[in-house]
Image (tube, rainbow, N blue to C red; front, side):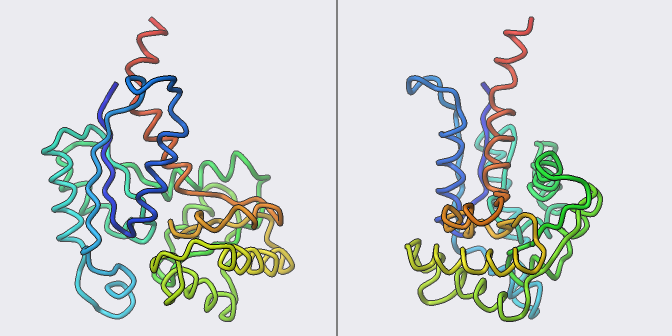
Length: 241
């Protein structure tokens, strides 16, 4: 087994969700079958949305410092459970000094294409900053899919679900927020979406009910599976030999 690292804290609930999915996807029947995981969860990393949209404090220093901690601790691969932080992926990879840092955006777009027909319309539910970077629009287009963005009214609800006083970042992963996200997905479906991309790592926590409306693409699950695949790769090679 190889040691995997998680650069988290953006937010803590999303970090926990990634680790839970790593456990879920690991074929284990006892403690010793699980992967060795290093988690650096730093909730004090400056807000990515504020930095990208409003000239707030640059989070790249803290992201790179956290990456260096994971590398020093022995991480052999790093995943980042924050879509917006991938705007800084080049700097993070330089700080990783050769340790691979997975690109959740690319992995998710590739996974979406395996699930959907060519030219399928995928609605991107995300922070305004993630939408502004165009990272998912570009990745989906490269994989033959069409990107849709929410209406201004829908985006207001998404923002509140993520950042609001009773949003996920405030600790409210509850039935009311799940229903509100489901309602947004229903409206996107009515507007032509064939799948919804839960492109803020807080949103998969609310997506169970929405999956009854149309397919939900969960980048956290995609990243978790990729980390597990990396961590178990030596064992798989050994069985193949």
